[in-house]
Image (cartoon, rainbow, N blue to C red; front, side, top):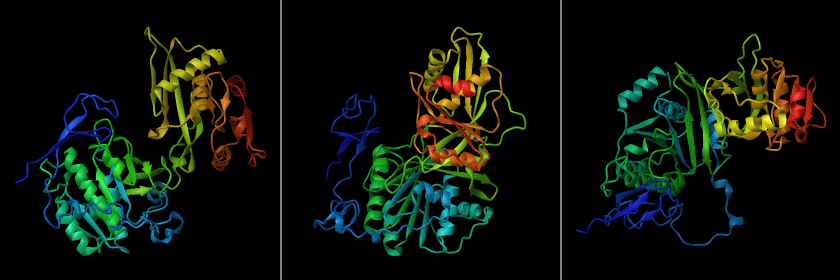
Length: 458
């Protein structure tokens, strides 16, 4: 019997080494190499053998094809039956595509996929493989959510060889695996959930999806830091990586695309967790604009761009005299380091000193703002709280603030102004580079070049 071979794989970048070393030469991370057992010579007909690795991305031939002659009609998209899900995927599911859905425990990953599978099964052949729950548990959840269960094929299995054999016979349009951390291959000696098992299981399933045109949807666990568990190479294998986020004290869930070969990244879909399961939120701006009757100092509405659409989000700031030697800078939903930089710009170019104040900034609704268009709105909210002066309810602000105090334009400025006008806002402070030639009806647009001009405008 051939001796089992081993290798050392970096859990951060997926680089392989023949022996252990303290630092990965590729990504320069320390203590990230993990030993894995390589599969031995495979049995005849095994899907993990060298023969199966030929034609990994589709066909098994070696003929060259001119790119201009590739038939694009071979990959028609079809809907998941959820518009928000389709938006994040870039327009729907692509045959042969592999989608990885991650998220914290209890976020609703299995619920979302079960709802999608039940509705898709009314028009397509769908197989749902569960490795974490029994069939009765899944059936009880589907009954509680009042889902149409006719036509959905279920399988409680963790063996990849068994799953692939069944899929070859049934030829499903969609194959859902819940979850990849419970799957295992017989030829790999490590336990399910290990680096080797996750990598080889995902490779075998993805290879099957590419060769047969089956849509593969995988559920992935996350670490305590929120990153997808398993080897980094797992995210390189699949076509789309989605993350379902939501705090335990909020009923809203956000589905964000982190990687997508078939659409835009950083696209955002919003769902609400109700007794009947996850429901789409058609107008996300409405849930982030639930403001009080009386305007309080430090509250302001900004327009952020998520994927392909604008969202109106409220940002709140609170300044209080600090009793500490080093005042605190706390940001929720916003980059804390960028907040410290903006406060320095406010002091240098706005003449307002916050060095003796504790500064707290919060983006309402659990949103995480990742773009720089929120800079100006955050600074004006800070000024409003510092001066204990409420800003007008009908005011909306966006713009990037530079280190020299200039207000830089941001992408899609016209669309942001139009979205604000649809929600009843009548006044906007924007960068001069984003000022429209003709403002929307009833909207006063104030274009500014410097931070000092924006402070005078409020």
